[in-house]
Image 1 (cartoon, one colour):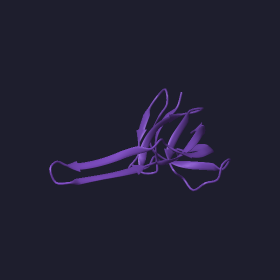
Image 2 (image 1 turned 45 degrees about the vertical axis):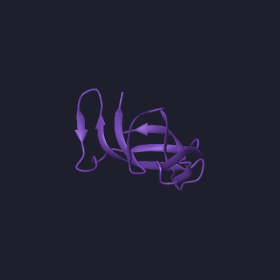
Image 3 (image 1 turned 90 degrees about the horizontal axis):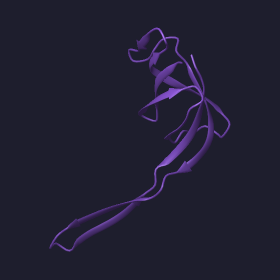
Length: 102
């Protein structure tokens, strides 16, 4: 079993072959193949950590879809000052299916 730590959208994710994960929005189209940066990789025998990337390691994924997460409400208030602000935010995401970890 091969496991890797990859970087996508400024965040780090633990992946293995066949896994599905949501990463911050990527600009690839649905069905496109994406190669992710590998920060660390491990197999049954050894673990390799990159400086900053692991040489020769490769993780490929396929874009399944794009979407937006549920809305969160940001509410600010200062008591006795007549100050209230309400804002909403929806984070975009891309769903990836990991095809290979080499």
